[in-house]
Length: 87
Image (cartoon, rainbow, N blue to C red; front, side, top):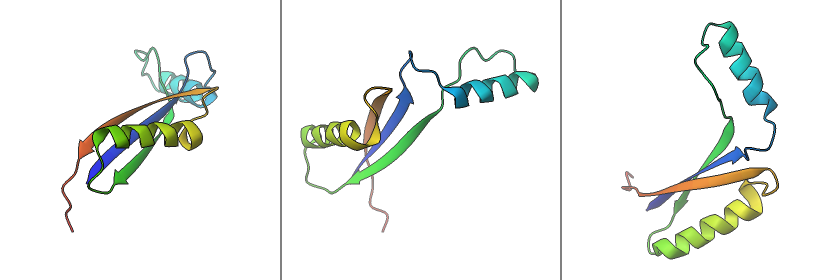
């Protein structure tokens, strides 16, 4: 089985009020060394055996573009790994 982890974050030019609030709260708690904090979403997709890496990448990009990330405000990256079936 192939597992793909998709990470979605706001683009640099987009204000992220949740991240700003967390960073300010951390500062009030004494964690002053944090210069940037990002808040995003992550998704884990498990693909059936038999698909090529190219087919998986194509499908992940389509899914991310159409459903997981708002292309006007967000970017996404992903990691592909093989997983042992533990069942």
